[in-house]
Amino acid sequence: MTDHTSMETQMRASNVSGSLFDMEENFLNGNLEEDCEKIEEYIGGLPRFAKGDGLERTRKLLKRLSVWECEIPRIHVAGTNGKGSTCAYLQSLFMGHGYKVGGFISPHLVTMRERFLIDKKPVCEEMFAKAFQKVYRAAAELENEKKEYPTFLEFLFAMGMVVFNMAKVDLIVLETGLGGRLDATNVYDRTDVCVLTSIGLDHCKILGDTKEKIAAEKAGIIKDGAEVVFIDTESGITDVFMHAAHVHHANVNKIDKSQFYVEKIKHKNIDFSYKSSYYNYISLTLSTYALYQVDNATLALRAYEAFCMRHELAPMPIEEIQNAIQHTFWEGRMEEVDKDIFFDGAHNEDGIRAFLQSVKAIPCQGKRILCFSAVNDKDYQQMITLLCESGLFSEAVAIDMEIQRGLGIETLQRYFSHFNRMNVYYERGVQNGINRCLCIKTDADQVFIVGSLYLVGLIKTVFRRKDND
Image (cartoon, rainbow, N blue to C red; front, side):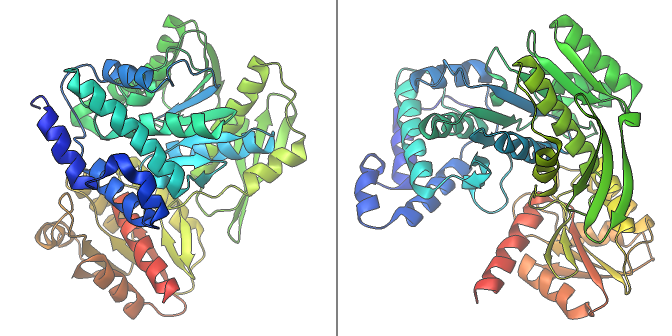
């Protein structure tokens, strides 16, 4: 990427507002919502990647913003699947403990404000705009000093740290954006707890073409002396995590599969048992059909306990732990948005496998209808194969999302046509796609929307408009 110039900085400013440095005046004029839309458009136009040392670029930006010397305890979460859900359970547990919790999450579904959570609520528009203004000015100053301009995630992460500083949170839960070792969230030298979720083949061109290589990139978040939490699922991945922990003299909290198990699946609930570090086995309930959330909740529970031990804190009573877990909700993960209409953000092979396990567990009196789309840099061929060969769906609606990275109708037809197990409809645009699903659905049927978080976000917007009509 070519170096930015001060002229380009001015062009970016004019593209956003024309009076970025007078945004307080816009607040008084009642244009805050419009300003936030322009801010999101601006940030969305920033490059995803850039040459040079991204961590050093982020470090300079945080120092300029006076949020570099951050002594707030941090829990860092990396992995292929389950990061967002694990972060959600972590936030619930620490809120139950009495902490004011900041959460930096990616991606967002509808608005960028979802990336900055204060006690699990998206930051307000005013704080979002103020944080943007601070980061924009600092980034512009550094650029004028011949420093590099931040990328999309670097800019957002800096905003997050500004938000958490303004909100005076007690603890921060950080979700990596991509990978771990070189991710903007990995800029700090100290972390209290590092959580590693499930590892699968995703972003292979960037992170590596084997699970072990990808695991090594994710394990890059492990810091000297930190608590490291993961589930022992595959020996090769476990070996990678153990080696990284050993190099950094970190304390390993390895969870064996025998330490948690599903007891019962009932209407919209999963009962499971978890072997606590404090209370032996605890019976817990998840308010979801998503079986994979048992793993994510278990990771969060062990990370919470590891934090308590590290800081010599007494854990919450069992009843409060049970309450925190049961009342955790995370959008887009086997979420029932309307009666018998489910969203799931699975967007890679392992995610689809976990999604299909959950679909099987949901009783269905009628037929199951698949609603699918994907972006072109994912292994959409394998996802389509798994979905079609599962035999779970009678009909499917394949959607061209009409976004730059989205799969077109022709590509969807090419791969779905290899299978003859269900009737497939092809639609351009999410509104047409969801209309088709609703048209063919009867009262006894279920609709499952999957394949891309972009698809989930776009269709959630459709449903929100529908609810407001």
